[in-house]
Figure 1 (tube, rainbow, N blue to C red):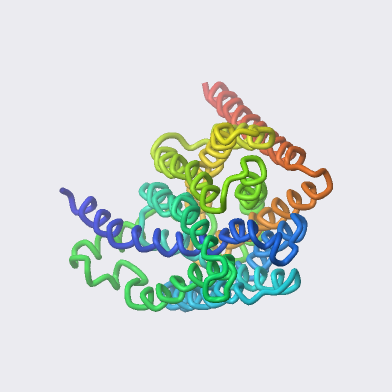
Figure 2: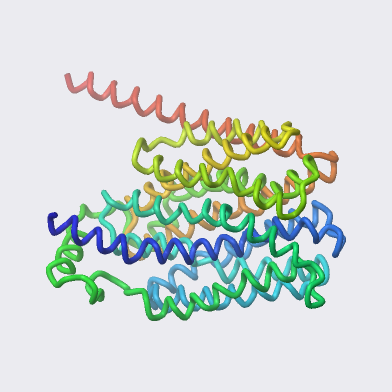
Length: 421
């Protein structure tokens, strides 16, 4: 085994499982409200409009605080900043057990988004400090499988916690928020002791391994952008944010309503809905890993996501619902590692902190627009058919733009080659 292989294997084994674990907890605390909705509608009188706005308002807090939070992480260090973020969001998530109406729901969801704003872009930035560019897509893909794993584990867990309704004088949804908020607080303190900032700080690496990684990361070709102002003024960064906006608008516009939609069309219990909702994300986990190893385009995954969203809009049986959500999850989630390989390849320094956070912030506007639109449209039309059809149409249009862009690039390259001849 070469020095490079030995060093990267150690880094992968040390960092990826832990980052995977804490992001599972983060994502579960973000989306567990979709399962709580199964009881919030009756207990607190939440309509789909109230729920959609509250589910999405998380992203507004994320948008406002994403860039400053990631700049703070770059300045103060990932270990301390990520630990602080986790403790704060864990406390806020658990506090959602105390909400008593739409106003407190909106406030707590906004605060949860503000607290978590620097977490995901911070980890993406952190990975650029440890993995050379040629290894980064795979590392990001392994980390991002936490998104689908959160649903695989969270579906049955959340459904089971809802079954505790009435125990200890608490509603099932209150047990859900209390139990699922606690791990973030505990893991925040673990993060303080476990993470190292850079390869040079890693006592678990041999001296020659530390020197190799530090030299390799330093040796890589100079990036296109390296300063904060470069990233904030870059049209390429803003375009990536727009693409991410579409992916999150469609993804959250569907995913936040899957438990409600499944229960409405099948009549299953809360626990059965949780189990059924988890199945598609098991397939999505495999798809994310495969997507990172094969190919780099986004057209195929986005088309798959569009097909799944459209099928989900009209499916009535549990089999077709499972197939539709599976196609949507496989498509949209397998697009993520390919997508995040792009900004991490041309951003570094303070531009990486600002640019990655800006892409995440603009994208998370979609995380507000998608659920809000779905909830309002469902209340207005009495069903999920119209909003999910619109989301599928937006994905189809986006895939068409990707295809046209790829065709134009190939044609330009061909013309340039003929001109040289």
